[in-house]
Length: 365
Image 1: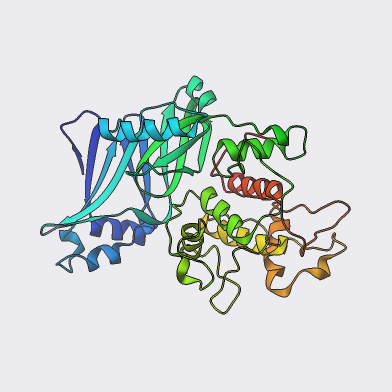
Image 2: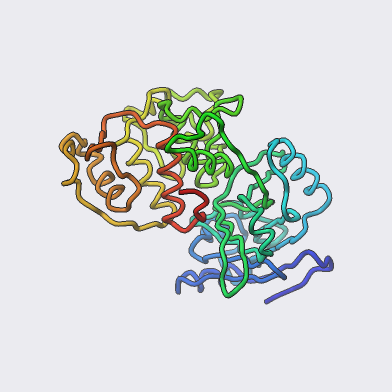
């Protein structure tokens, strides 16, 4: 059922929670079209049990499920978005900010569904000129906090689209943001560093320095994965006893744990400040692929002379990363599982994962 609102830039579509359950049983997707925007909600991505637990009824047919698309956000939201984009320093907004909400209402109670079990897709039809300008979409929270969300700019049927993939609802802005790191120029990882920086997946260490050869910690790697997946860094990191609540990485580590990207090293510890090894990184990448629903392929490690050095707990992940083309190895057939992974290697493998999963288009070689 489609119910237009009074505002020309706002549309409401009303279902019931039972409708969503019925579609989920058939693994179907709700597609709501509003002008140049289509919102794809896979029914299985909605936790309807959690919704019903908050309602004073056991009948899902009684609970309206309301999807709202605002193609041009209100003045207050536009102000928050523009302030946030300006603060980036290198970015410009390409299109007016869009807002998406999903709510359930019954008996005076309203439940906002802000997080989903699987990625939802928002397709925005754009012009070719806009396609050439758009770098990525960002989520802008009410407090002005921003984060990257995976964005794939592509053509289909002779038209250009920006497909935005996200596990949350909020205000979205498509931006142009071209970042170049001078210290990466001429290095093997220059294109990947600049693309990851432009998408705001990997931020420089300051003064426009990328520091690609620098090893990174387990906390830094977890934070980059959270950025890459477009997740808010607002989790509870104190699920690990060695993650202080006031640490810069606490929210990211907590969110990575919440989505199953990290499990810790045992004894309820995470070892956030220890440098991460390549085999540890491969295991986290494998988990991120499951969240992105990228199946990939399992390969073998026979071509690597040091394959025997892979720990047993990392073997499946290493085979999968190699078979899926995400990890290629170092030098002459060396996998180097116990070596630390660098910022440049991290940017490269994360981009490979996002591309392989179809979540971003390829902007670099």
